[in-house]
Length: 248
Image (cartoon, rainbow, N blue to C red; front, side):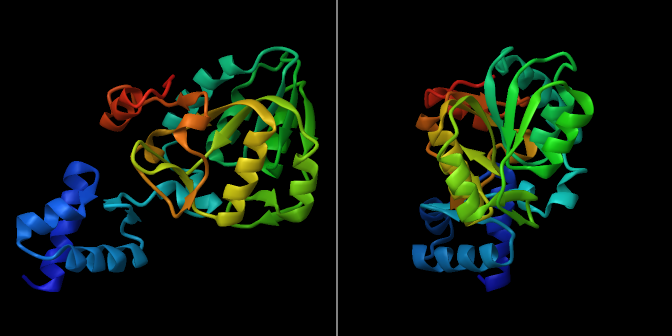
């Protein structure tokens, strides 16, 4: 089998099954696992999939630059936002992450809500100021152009002084196999730091993130209170539930 044929086959398996198991594909094609792993590595370098232990998952479309994501799965993000509103109780101190799903949540909050919301996202802070009466605390630091959230040493210093009731976490991939992932290593570190300063963490997971993966681990699924999504019948959400993850 030619290299191009193997790689086309791997992509077709990924599209059909939502994952590639290197051992299974190698056995099906009568090839070595090393050959399949090399093909997966090359496809990952082209951005066509995300390598994980034992195979590959779809590359997260949510890892695109911020502006490209503003038109991605907008209806799904709005449904997730409407569900996540119930996690914010009056008087609570909340960390609302950056990203377009968090932005949808900021716009979905009741105008009369009384709460304190901390955010690393200038876009989320502006949306909160425009549509709600909450107290807004903007975390400072270096603004990453890809995600439009702050990070770095200054942000870490401020986060170490935060105490929150709930952290509404944005990621680019949610998978029972790969866990919670994102596309930027510094952003992953900032998210972990915010989770560590919050009593509980809920994941905002619109449709394009379910079953996808990115390069950098954020948190194990066991360390979050649950996942908020709108894909009730998605097989990946069923896998999460079987693994003991609460899914709203």
